[in-house]
Length: 398
Image (cartoon, rainbow, N blue to C red):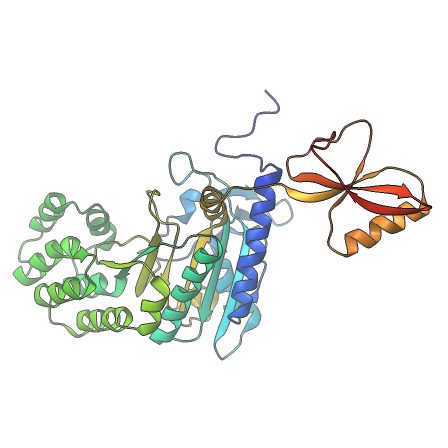
């Protein structure tokens, strides 16, 4: 049928559309209060500008088309992070710290999960030009403040560090991250052990440490880090990654921001294709996947000719709006009903009310069907002037 939408696409109806727009404004205003500047990249770019990172899987999620002007292959963005990195590297070319925020639809050739949309609305914030822990703390703080602005009060933050496993894989040239990372992510110890056993001469310390990595998780960060120091190789890059995680979990700012629970999972390697350091994900009760996630991806702009330290986060606006809708009952907004007449005095009264922030709906025909507005007042002509009168009881137009 012509009116059926493609699979995993949907219309956004009035109440949800209003919630999304209000939440979008709140989140962008919040980012602005932290000093983040808004950017709006185009929906379509050359395909090679959208595919970043080692062995990027974004290609499988990208809708592709041919540009009739240039003949080059274009992609509909599946993620806005590469675009914002391009803006920092190519368009702004600033030397100091740059804070950028964004919001827009992205398109996925395949849905990420069962029941998920192929047109998420992505909101995020990125810091470029600072490699210190302060940047990581700030984006985590902004992520959690964004969730609270969306009505989510209880959050679990899960931390990891991609530099840790890469430092371990560098100990033997035969260790292939593309082969091993899926086993880490699934915590598939038998499968991981079988793959490692196919590498004759692999140092016992490295073999044991790689098998230990998926077991290093828990709700007591100090305990997880202590076990990690005991089980993982005593090489400088591994110790540096553990030191960074320890400083992060001991930060008073993070303790104030989380407000619920903090966990560490050193085997949570999602995003490994371009993340380089500390990564984080936020989870809420009753939801299977993360509600927001992010991390450090230093030198991501190198593919655009200018690599810089970078860290940031993103969330899906529809998911956050859905959680906010569950947390509170959505009530129609109060509105003023007005007749439709060719009367300059009536038009002036309506303009005055709308300028003052009131919702005024002029009724055309015998009824006006609304789900967003509740008529509790009406404009009536009395004693030679238009005035607002409160309605008693249900409106005949509701």
